[in-house]
Image (spheres, rainbow, N blue to C red):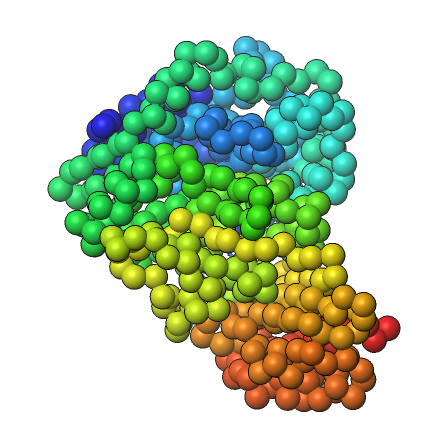
Length: 482
Ligand SMILES: Cc1cc2nc3c(=O)[nH]c(=O)nc-3n(C[C@H](O)[C@H](O)[C@H](O)COP(=O)(O)OP(=O)(O)OC[C@H]3O[C@@H](n4cnc5c(N)ncnc54)[C@H](O)[C@@H]3O)c2cc1C
Ligand code: FES
Ligand code: FES
């Protein structure tokens, strides 16, 4: 058992114990290490000024087998245990600027400069990915997508996007080649192999190697909070609504990183949005497209799917996906393991059926079959980096020989009730029926009896009702009524 958090920062080993382990990484960098290139503006994951690069070498075979950009303002140091981290100070190689820096200078991508290190680090994350795939150019679309999580108040974005597309990938070396050496690899492997417990009167953090240890710890310490990547928890901590003082992290439990798809798909609790997108993009492209407008690359690179489900927000984007897929939530507690249909998981506003001694180990679901249609819709005030006003996901399995006859249907929506919701009455009306204009008009009328949406900052109740009809209309018109 270790009693120190171990990570590498700009190529140097850091062992962190005590309350320092509970600091947000941005504060640790700025106030403890005097690495003030990393800036803090919003402290809630929205502006990207605090972007740094993280490599977690224990998960391979995905887009994330690289240094990738994350936000340091909402990430406690302890959760970055067994990682390799790079800040903007690491980019310059002797007197030579990194291409992301050189291109920002030459394209006049900076004015006051406060946002610039964050943009440069987000762009460097993309450069790392491109170099690892041996790709030669950055397109306008890739540049915009990569910089979705960064805000600039003075320059205007065109100069920054130009800088991104003008990075000369042919002359840049990967940071992995420059920083990730054998010594670091061995040290991080050794750290990853051992549980870690940091305990002080004001802060405790336990990260076990096995689920059995995790469950036993939670049973003995019921006031402990399970933390994944803290993209929800870090925000509420920074707003001082909760304090992250007693934490259980599953980042050393190997099995939780797996996505397997032999019979059913099993997705472990540590799988991130980026990794899931990588897995699903050819299998269900609509899910990948929907995830493209989830948060920012910095958030998706670290946020877990299970964190999004456990958070139980009525406007969370992934609950409707898994409700529509008919997923089960896998739970492990002191009385053993159980598998619960997700439709029984969300009980009330942010209240779930997870018992206090239980940990979610993952999700299990079938992919849509050959005779299925699957569509995901999201409405938000801004297209990028905004949570939903409403979302809806529909899966229909059609009768084998007749596409317009519904064999099975699941319609799930967020933003219309206190929990993510299955529209079960509408599903019952449609199951076994042939979709025609008359039936379609009936369900558009009847569907409103199933929910009572709120009016809030994001949308009025009336607007949400219109959206529900519009999504149903888009789905059925595209699939059968066109
Ligand atoms: C800038 C920004 C943009 C965002 N955009 C979106 C968006 O577009 N759509 C959207 O839906 N969300 C969005 N989010 C919310 C957030 O990113 C997601 O909810 C994320 O998936 C949470 O995952 P995490 O790993 O960070 O969880 P954490 O923050 O670590 O935990 C979230 C909750 O899950 C619990 N938990 C985590 N793992 C387990 C487990 N194994 N068992 C039991 N409980 C567990 C924690 O105790 C906590 O209550 C955004 C957040 C930010 C900061
Ligand atoms: S300071 Fe804005 S995302 Fe971290
Ligand atoms: S250059 Fe001033 S905020 Fe971007």
